[in-house]
Amino acid sequence: MISKAIGPKVLLVEENNHLFNILKPCFSNHNVRLTRVKNISEILSILNNKYSLLLLDIHLPNSENQLMVKRIREENLFTPIIAFGPRNSDYEIESFRLGINIYHSKPIHCKLLQAQISQLISSFEKPVILNMGDIRIEISSHSFFIFNKRIPLTYQEFHLLFLLIMAEGNILSKNTISRNFTHNHRDVSYAAIDTLISRIRTKLRPHLEDTFIKTEYKLGYRINPKYLKSFCIEKLVD
Image 1 (tube, rainbow, N blue to C red):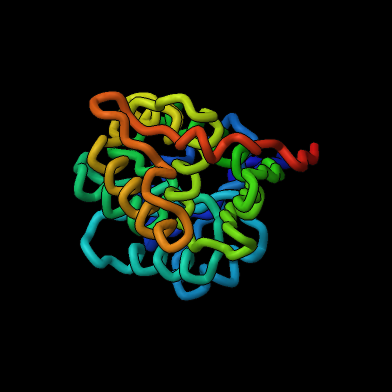
Image 2 (cartoon, rainbow, N blue to C red):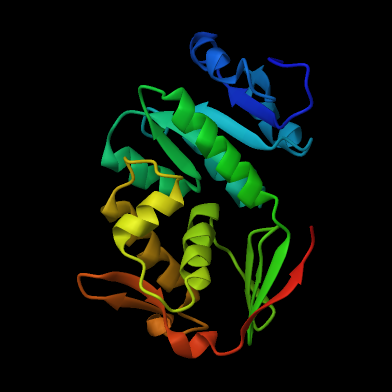
């Protein structure tokens, strides 16, 4: 634990102290309670203990950490995850596929990391329910329903879809999506955004036509306005 003050509980997965020693100064003056664990096999039960965020290094194809992230999302645990890795678009795209929320390119930038953590935790805890006719979005559980059937979206897919819906039919450029998706994280690639859009369309296709998310040539993406006619905030709990 880095601070005795009450604050978000952050879990770091690492076998040695290298990353812990790098991160410690980032949190020394903030109300963040950082816990380091070595045993990945215990992560699932630990996450059920109300950790606000998970931090890990993801640097090797098919690494144990990657497999662990996949298992977490398969268990429908939506704890936000920030992964550290090399400046490489292939790793970034793979992190999106796994359901990692933010890919933070090394070297680690403390101020950027602090902003990312604050943004992730605050957005994760907003208990909002949105209605779009036969479509229902539950923010607190990161759930997307069509005709009361839950669509299995990863956290990344859900977050991107949420951004588009909240734009209320306005076009979002890839640059705008990139900046909002990871709190101004400059390393998010347009290719990763295209990949997420394709995956979302595939999952929605049995229930919605592909034009639910419209591609505006050379401009960006938007939600088809015809689906937004009944859009409203059904419930908002402070």
